[in-house]
Image (cartoon, rainbow, N blue to C red):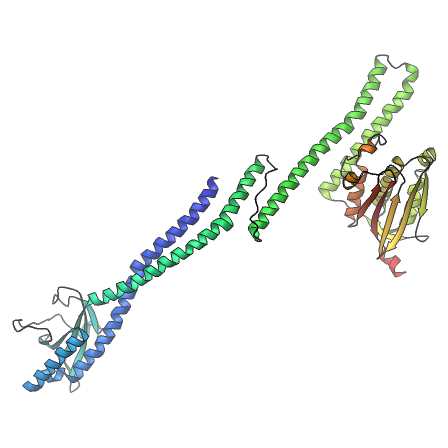
Length: 476
């Protein structure tokens, strides 16, 4: 829970930090950039006015024509009113010859520090050498006569007007940023409902699974996205783990049962021999039973070891071409004795005299042995077991069908599970381990082939598996 809250708080903290940094950036860096830009634009505008004044009016102030000078001064005062800026004319001695806003009582003013040629620019900001009480934008343009600079036109405008313009732009920027931040709350909302809450549910489910509650289900959002897929996958994983645990419990129960039964019989008979309950003349009979039980334990142990090898390393196949019909005949012959005892006939319906397949011969022989052994166990006396081979779509189909007790409908899908035995088979299969069909399925799947079962209770069961037909046989 702490990690989830930390993640969400980090996201919110990042959002808030972004907003703060954005406002700081606008208030400092952006503010100065805007002020410099507006100052330069206004300076360019005033410079053009200064050039106009220098070329058309300022020279008259230098002339001896009193009427011309008076007319020029009147014109400059009119320009002052128009552009809202104080216009000065300064000679080379830094003396102010004309001030559009000067009063008659003003003293003579000389600004000896004023040297435009040294500044390298055409404008400056500040109080112009303490001439003003507030910061001004001062723009100057030279006055020339006979190709010589004889003075300067200096136009002063309060910097406050530019600052006001800058502030108006900043206010618009702040408002735009505020709207952007408000709109970006939609992203937080989407993150909350599309990522954080589903992730919260997934984390909660993981905690429940870690605590052993595999029945806990994560509520799916219904959206077809990665988070929904993750939720569905987690639910499926929990179901599979729960099913795996159930299978493990059943596996342990079945192993315990199948080991305990023969061990109990062996111990019982041996103790009866030791304490004299079984007389010596009966020893041979009961020792034979003990040997059969030990063989059953050996068969069970070997089956478990074989399946364990399949699980860990996968099955190593020695693929080759061989005659499946011949293997079926030889396998059927090994059951001649028990078939004669139960009066069961094995009918072979084989395609062709030979039928070449490409597979692991020993493993397929084991499949046939297990299926035929299973069919004989659950067949009635005086019945027929039919083994048939057919070819379809370059695949060889092998069928083993009996006329036995059959498999209940609800158990058909479980017959390949390890140690699984139907209630009908428990009385008949006293020596079985419940691993034979599991091994059959593992072998067929290792060949990338399929095996199916068709069964009707009281009528019989048919197992059908496929094999790859040999390429050499195809060419023939």
